[in-house]
Image 1 (cartoon, rainbow, N blue to C red):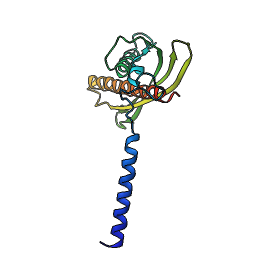
Image 2 (cartoon, rainbow, N blue to C red; image 1 turned 90 degrees about the vertical axis):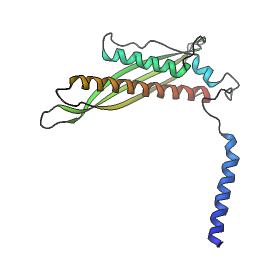
Image 3 (cartoon, helix red, strand yellow; image 1 turned 60 degrees about the vertical axis):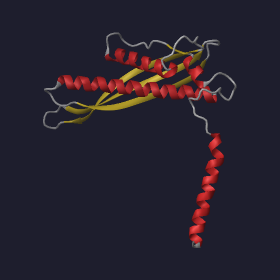
Image 4 (tube, rainbow, N blue to C red; image 1 turned 180 degrees about the vertical axis):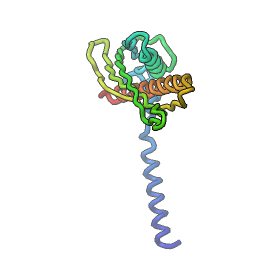
Length: 185
């Protein structure tokens, strides 16, 4: 073995030893263990968040999307379980945008659209009535419009984009709330 091979081997062993020493420091975020403050587990804290109905104009496309966002949030926070008395209330406001990204130069019709949702949310502690988390998040997804003759396919593409954007919004909000419950800020 040459000197450079021994140096590489020593570096590899050093990195492996360092990784072994820090392996015990890792704790999964969504573990069933109590939080560092000694309170209930993160899963328990997330399931005690009551998601308020999202106020949108009735009969609009955004109204359907808001129901999807709320349902995704409820499932993401509770895991499908219910019956926990709420300690926090989550209020969400949504705004939707639609943008033509690629336009066919021959027909002047859009080929690819971009659908977006902007969300602002507030987590309020029910015991004190104090807003503990305020934030904003967004989601942008694209979808294709296959042609003038296929209107149904274009509408279905938009609906799929709305569903994907709703899921991203719910995941972003859940991650932020999990961060608050673990770190307290």
